[in-house]
Length: 245
Ligand SMILES: O=C(O)[C@H](O)[C@@H](O)[C@H](O)[C@H](O)COP(=O)(O)O
View 1 (tube, rainbow, N blue to C red):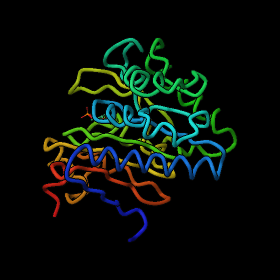
View 2 (cartoon, rainbow, N blue to C red; view 1 turned 180 degrees about the horizontal axis):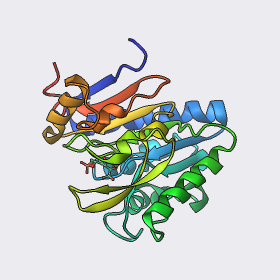
View 3 (cartoon, rainbow, N blue to C red; view 1 turned 180 degrees about the vertical axis):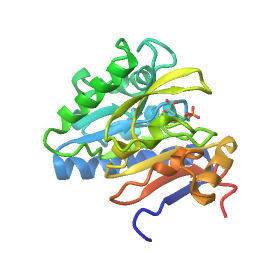
């Protein structure tokens, strides 16, 4: 399979997708810890990954990872307090960090008490500090997909889609009338492994457009995700993959 081609992992049900991605997460973590002594993962937000995080924190999976060696980041965050039900940090804290007793020092959250531009700049600096003299390369980036083909907070027709900057930026999302803070595509694309988690019929059109439609990253931002070092994995249920040839 040519380098950079997406690797599709399609399962009959969402539960089967979650189990497969949880196993992929474990294997990726084991490899990273063996190679580098730690596992740096950028989590996705929204609703889809909540069940994945709960599964990883369940007795079946929690024993399979050296959680003290795992460092958590966020591919994007909403410009809301960390106590807001909209907060990606709060969702992960509730579903994953608290059940596993993850130490705060292992979690790198966006400081949404700051002005969004400052929050983005500070988050980018924190990522750079974590990786030190090395390039900021996450061992795994988890991504979701909106039904409009956005991923992280890379929304259609937004300026952040055109940056070459390896970092974190504020973005105003007109269709939501909301400000988000997001890792840029160049930063996401430095990852060693990238996995989309997509399930449900509502995502089928976006999946087909991204994987088989015309190249138009302004309209289908998830097409920007193409790590230079290898494959993007798509973990999907049959409903989300139904329109693929
Ligand atoms: O902050 C967010 O909302 C996510 O990072 C975003 O990119 C999400 O993955 C998609 O919007 C899909 O969201 P659902 O999983 O809720 O459909």
